[in-house]
Image (cartoon, rainbow, N blue to C red):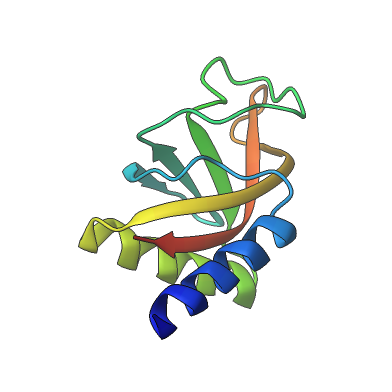
Length: 112
């Protein structure tokens, strides 16, 4: 019972902190670049900021040029390797190429 209450509390906090969040999903692919990581999700999410990549609803970009970005990348790799379900918080668009943008991830929760 205690675990259920803790899980519900964490989930409620996550919902508040991540105003725009993906559905609970798994990570399908990870593309690693010099200062960023692009994550392809198994399920689509919304594109409220109208990012320009044709498949922007399938991808998120994580900047890895900060300590916080590296912590998120570490958590993402852990979720990917273990097959855990995740929910990402995201906002704004980030450059994936010179002409295309995808939503920018700012947080991740591993869920059961």
